[in-house]
Image (cartoon, rainbow, N blue to C red; front, side, top):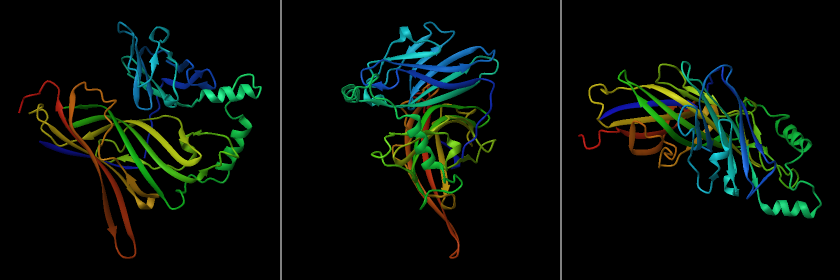
Length: 358
């Protein structure tokens, strides 16, 4: 069994590309349970050849369009999701009879074909309202049912939250970070590198971003990540100091001050193994995410189950073991003590086709 480790500290980098995915548009607005929801991905290929468009709910891929395949569309419905594939194509997807449970993050990912194989994403937060809201608003004489908060209300809330907000200062008392990781795909080569496509969600509370729903009826705010403090992640044991990451463009903030930030990265890691000599041997892989108390992170939390594998694409490797744990490293002296909180995700991988080979 060969062992390698991937070490991170909290940060993110992005790569500029020619392909642009501008935004996601959706109708109707607002959206109620039992409505049909049409999602449109607005992108510009700038002369590139389209390879595929993929749609995700949270981290779960639910629809795919591939230009050169027959059929071109494939649906992977999430629980309670009904997809009309006949009315979905390279720019849009139609969800039928949506439920309240389908509120959340929607992501479109656009990829181009050879020779450059570019990929970009856009995200939006969608709130699906109860049917009772539509009924109440009609009783009050509204023409179009329950409406999203007017721009004036949202602008006032923005000014209240960010008027004196300093993104260079971490939250009062520091932040406890919940780390959720979804493994999408892995690949290995004979040179000792592993490429891991990972979706990361970090959740924390910032008391500066709280508001009273009774006074300001806004259920959530989507904020560009450059406007607020957030933990950072760095890849340490790769050929580059960071991974190939994509900014998803916004962070979700709720009235209780909870902040949810999501990123997608392909991390290239240098590993110590004899993969070329014995590709069928089970590989043991460790990924460590680290934060120091001086950066404002007082603790990290992770579920012992490890990676979320619901979105994992088993193209080449089966995951035979998956877990996570937290460690604490103390350094310094009596006058200056620092703590590093680490979350270690452990995987064991077996190449597909090698089952039964010892």
